[in-house]
Image (tube, rainbow, N blue to C red; front, side, top):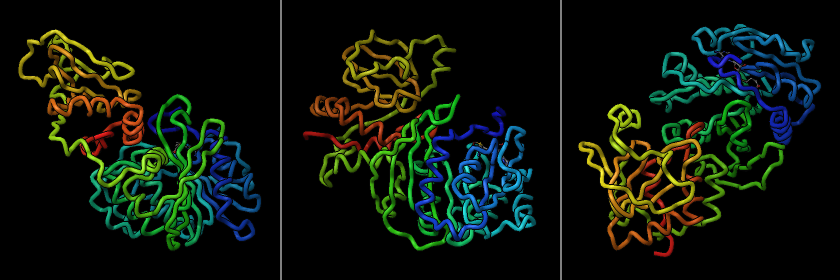
Amino acid sequence: MLNNLAQHYTHHIHADLLVKQMGRYVEHTKLLSGIDLGAGKGVLLDAALKKWEQIKFSGIDVDLDKNNHSDANRVAFFSADLLTDKSVDFLEHQKLIDCCDIAVCNPPFQSFQNNQLFRNLCKINKFEACYNMPVVTTDIIFLLHNLRLLKPGGLLGIILPDGILTGKRFQILRKSLLETHNIKEIIQLPDKAFSRIEVRTHMIILQKSVLQSNKIELRQVNNEGKLSKKLTINDVQLEKRMDYSYWKWQLQQQIKKNTIKLSDLNVEVLRGSQTKYFFEQQNTPYFHTQHLPTSPKKISFSISKASNVRKAKKGDILMARVGKRCLGRMTLVCNGSVPITDCIYRIRVPQKHLNIIWKSLSSRLGQEWLKANGHGSCAQVISKSDLMDFPIQGF
Ligand SMILES: C[S@@+](CC[C@H](N)C(=O)[O-])C[C@H]1O[C@@H](n2cnc3c(N)ncnc32)[C@H](O)[C@@H]1O
């Protein structure tokens, strides 16, 4: 495993599921050619070869895997670095532009940059609205390459990290995708779909440059490949978030427009001013996500003498802001004071509302809301603006 190339291979159960679901949207007899960018060991490629027996595929990877046993008579393998400026011309020289009926892809998920290659691909794909995106990742580059290679009407099945589907900074990318292509289906994979890493990902199936169908199917799949019931969501709503967890929660709750939110109750939400590392260097006792109880519970502290750091005191609610498994963990400070790290939110509320807010946040529904509203591929984060929208039950 070469981690610098993000070689996390798709499980064959999910590869088979992806091509099976793609099969719902194409007529077998009309297909001629397919592609897999970042083919790796060929798990997706093999699933596609099995599914579409008449198609010839191209498989491209910077590190052509010697363990790739995909049928060499039906696959043309190319070694190429798809993250360099030259990749745009390379794909053109191979006569791969606008000619693929089918594309499958599990790209590397790594940070990249908003550079000439990115802007060039945005221009080619008419994604000019994304030109100024502050954060660009390698999976976005692979997505844009794929869109360029597909024929109009061609079908892409791609695995993307959670941030692309849920992060505010990628909203413009989602908008461009929804406006230009026809997203058919989105399937949330289990967080442990890839061995050795825990990362939330989703499979997106889309058709190139075809008028939007308006309604998009969202599902979740488990490790055994069993699909949940579908949710059908309007494409405009998906600009905000595209993940099944969030929409399942939204639909379950059917939040009424006049629900009182945290932001309506004169609440102050601040995170700690220093990192855990800072407190350790200073040898100062601190409160961090690891100290939060696994289920909501009240805690008393002694009085902290630390100065020039943000502290919590009696009546404050402390909650995990970021972490792998701690979203939703919280405590209510009963006594004393304690410095908090920047991974903790301090929620300070007017005394008269404390009871109802604590009950609401710590209830089963509150905990589900927090989990559904967290986003991020590895560590889950709850943003302050989302937290301010928290609906208070029973007000
Ligand atoms: C997440 S793995 C997926 C492999 C395979 N498609 C699968 O689904 O199991 C990503 C693949 O992208 C390849 N890759 C990473 N950086 C690349 C680059 N700059 N150009 C082309 N391929 C790259 C890696 O070698 C790896 O095989």
